[in-house]
Length: 417
Image 1: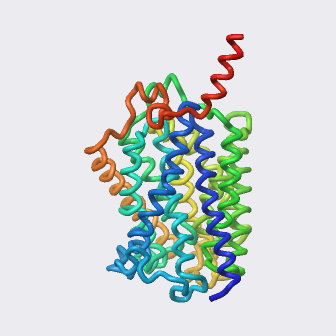
Image 2: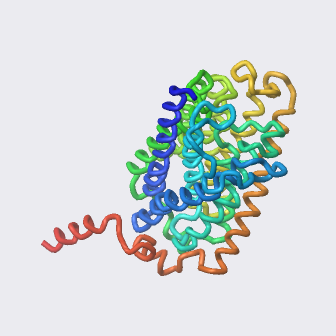
């Protein structure tokens, strides 16, 4: 047991927790005002649902004794035998590791909800969330971090490029396609109703990401410091890359674009943060910022899918770029866990090949499993809100409340005067 590592991980877990209300504000500001509480509710409700599932069975699926490289056993069912002593070679209490990983499990499905914003019914969301957490997230986490086949293959994913971002990005895309487009989308396009909410949420995400990435080292050491620095560098370069692209493409750099670029940079650096140099982080951040911008501004329009808040364009595409560029720029010079020098240093495609396998496997499994989950949940409850419910607003039709009811009432009173 190391008290310094324990203190560091307590703080890191709390920082990752901040990302969840941060995401609620980020997504809440992006939707129309009649839907703001519905999308925020999906992040907040996930706190309760996923926490209980994780304690009862999710953690053991992800981190129990490996079964054929695919899934964890039931060693820790109900957190049985999880106590204050470290697990394996860790230097922190086992229960603290459970709590830290729990925050990842909560955040990941919350990311995917942005793709189906403004039309996913809350009862359907609850069913999808519960099944997705156990059927998609926990097994993929086991593949990479829990002793499963991708980790054994040598895939490098320090903090969740495949586990978190690719899985949520491709699942969000599948859900958006299966559920269908928003009612009257062509004549009622999504214009963010509160950019300051978006900036606030983005800032909380950025702060939390330091715990997300640096904390994945599970120790207060040099590797954590490298992950911390690379996280910030890539975010800043992603911000600049998006702004430059937006300026050249549309003539103006926007506040929304700047914070979106920062998030894209944070997504891209997640798998690579402890395996590459700071200079490589600049290159990664620039590429992610530029490519994610054009994925959102051009690709989505050409393909015609209704990913409301660009989950696939930022998390799916950004996570994919990050995973593959990890194979290009990883080096044992900064992390001895790198067994295969990256393509940039060695000319060897081996690690890129492994990263590609991990990426494609996550794409395939998450897409198929999500499609099945949607069809199963759809048997019991409609997935999409009706046209009238969407027009009225999911805040009132799904939750019986309004984010701005007092303000609207005050405005009406003044107008009557």
